[in-house]
Length: 511
RNA sequence: CGGGGCGUAGCUCAGCUUGGCAGAGCGUCUGGUUUGGGACCAGAAGGCCGUAGGUUCAAAUCCUAUCGCCCCGACCA
Image 1 (spheres, rainbow, N blue to C red):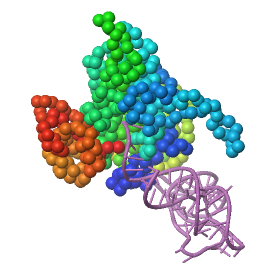
Image 2: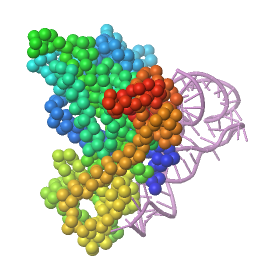
Image 3: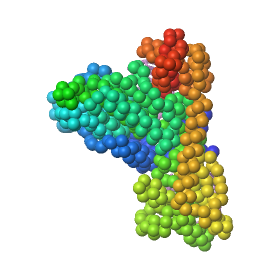
Image 4: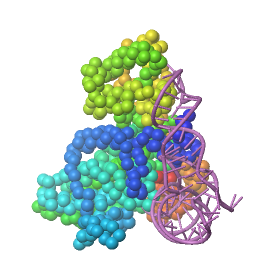
């Protein structure tokens, strides 16, 4: 048992924080609500960025960067948008600090206050209006990786922080159909990414009007189910129709010689995905990282008593590492500086994923816990007994499976296969959990009972309506996570109003 | 912003009710014995008791103010 991590059963919220702390993913910053992403956590974000960025480029997008500060007046141009974000904007009103009677005070008051971007639709819309003149300028398919700030009242590491890192895609199109297709295409990109890369099964669907993005015509979401039975929104895509193009005057001369407003979309995922990954996969022993996202793939723990044994084990370990990464990498690693006795070898230079050997002066048990809590998918133990037998002991983080493997079997391809098996098993496990915790409710009473006793997703017919949704939230703490089907051929009776509706929705308590 | 809790060693906290030498465990450092799942022995370092004011011979302890953090709500990727 991990002695520094509360069990999920005893205190889920504390468990989550303990896992982050034990794995050194993040720390609290001096400013309330802000977070320091430590190297172990940032490496996971880099992995997410790398894979998603490739997917964006494969779907025709390019990266750019827009400024952090936005004129306050921009936010007000789209009525719903200002309504949605005004309450959580950090506002910059001064340009310098001056010497006052009691130390430094803000000086150089700005004529127009600036806001720190909570999202960039407005500033990007403004720029697009200058860049788009003709249908030939469309579609405009731009993404940016950046930080945004939303002054949230309550924060939790990774899940909700005042400042967070994300990507925001912003596209402009000639027709509504194209923009709608883009919105759904990116939802598919997110879905595939969440399931293949992070091994998190997600449900795709449309948000109700009550839950949609301020200023959007339609918002789509992928929803994951965490191990405490609560849902987490993992990514959203928005169809803005002409709302922002009208507000920011993004217009073009069409093929028919007529001026028209462009149709825009936006879509984003954030460092919240790291929180999702933690809560979807980790266990009472600590972090479990899906191999695709793991910065360190294998941690090798040498075991020895005397200097003689150490030398023998070291020779054998070199052979093991060479079998996995190649002899050139072993030679290259010898020339790299290594921190406190941990030597690193690249297994995959394109992703930066490593194999490490832990030569620190600590007991083997300590090292086992160390790498286990950091979620490293595989550990290899090499001791005198293994050297004698020509084997290594392989341990899977996911299920603690332990087996002895002859050194002759080890190779890069062998390791890749092992990692793929783990990746698949993790997705399978999470999907089974999700499926087992998705229940149908035929009545409001039944839904209340399920939510109170079991949690998870509740699937039910529901006619979306702001007032009803507010009441349901008040009574059950659950919200409509998404509409999963709107098929006129398969209508049903709304569990709340009793009216006939086409909307089959998923309810859950959410983060 | 409302309700509750808490600020004491790097961390977790005891001490406060009833004022009287600043404490424990863990961690860190040193030396030794150890090393196949969180070792043991011996020694050491480490503090403006959140901050400011007040009461008192005397304040971590009582009073006042203030700042900050955590939990529960409202707001949210």
